[in-house]
Image 1 (cartoon, rainbow, N blue to C red):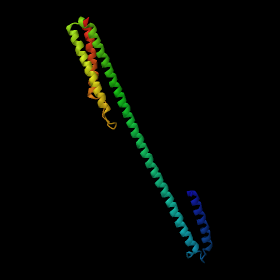
Image 2 (cartoon, rainbow, N blue to C red):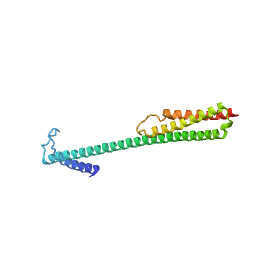
Image 3 (cartoon, rainbow, N blue to C red):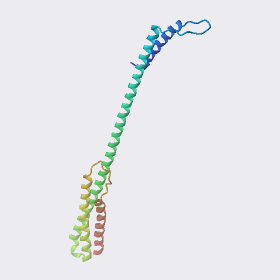
Image 4 (cartoon, rainbow, N blue to C red):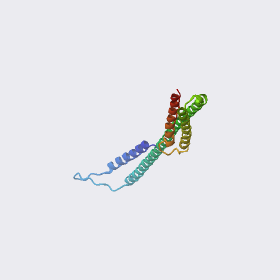
Length: 193
């Protein structure tokens, strides 16, 4: 039953009983009115009023409880959505870091392969310092590959809930060893000339 319909029924009953009560009030001589003794209609009106007030209060309480339940449900959905968004952003950051480490490993592998090919092709024509620089550069590139794979494994093994930084020491060292290895390979070519 709608609340407005319930209110209209209550208002109609109260109006009807109020008109019945007004007709029974007698005027005393001197203008003082006397309150009539409660009649059956007055008792019925009081009983109906109490019933209607209790029904209204129950309806309002039920609506308030329903609204609180809906608000709690919406808050829970919002919290779940925020948590899912946080986990998705963390997963994307892990994917980007692993992609970066794979690129480092690939670059180090290409540099190492180039160093080996250079050593095989021009090893006899190289001076001793040029050979040493190329060999040290090749070793640094191999170590860079190993550290990149180690960093990938450590990032892949992390739990998604951890908010720790994704830059591992082995990932940073892999980048610097890649740069040093490539620099030594380039220096060996300069020393060869």
